[in-house]
Image (cartoon, rainbow, N blue to C red; front, side, top):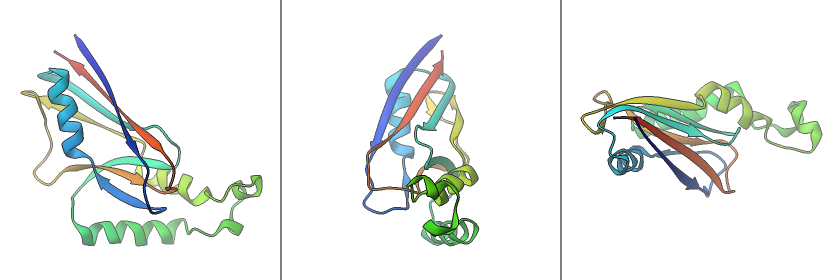
Length: 138
């Protein structure tokens, strides 16, 4: 069995952004040489997410609006922020959107559905963060 590890680094300009990373993950799969296996893509920070969905700007806007209704950025509203932080909402948004995805590798490519794309979701941006890509298989 082969194993391949790679990292993607991000430093967003905005506090909240969604970045399509599908091509970068596909490049890692090709570099790994794995033809049949699994690809884990994992946000390594507790205020960021990795998820799969459609790459459509209206949907991205809807995600942002929905998340803001569920966990508004209102620093005075959260117990966590009494510690001196101002990012409790980002922790909650990450919990909702998820920590990682696992995608099958078939024939040396990500085995995604017709509209599926992999995204990095940032909820407390403007500082350097990383995503782990771990590929295992034959």
